[in-house]
Image (cartoon, rainbow, N blue to C red):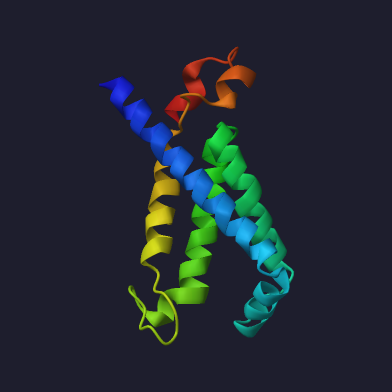
Length: 141
């Protein structure tokens, strides 16, 4: 039973990592200045767009390789909460077509990240290589 849970969590971690990496990469490739402008238009500091894109890219890579998965996932939970509350809550769960997409995908990504933040994912993770000398006390947190 534990093997199934670890495999499932690994799949979740990899999909979440790839998703966030691609979203961060697209922000830079599509012109980060557009994202900066959008952040400013909704009342956020424009420079925050760089931090968000970097967190998505670096955090995505960290999840893919399994390095600091719990911490990265917790940061992504906060990021998605901010995206929902500040950016998409007003357009509704599914959006309305004219104002863009709703927050259903953001919620799904938030829940995936929350699951990993709570449960961790050690299968095929660099954390196991770097922290193999530590006991399992941190896993019970």
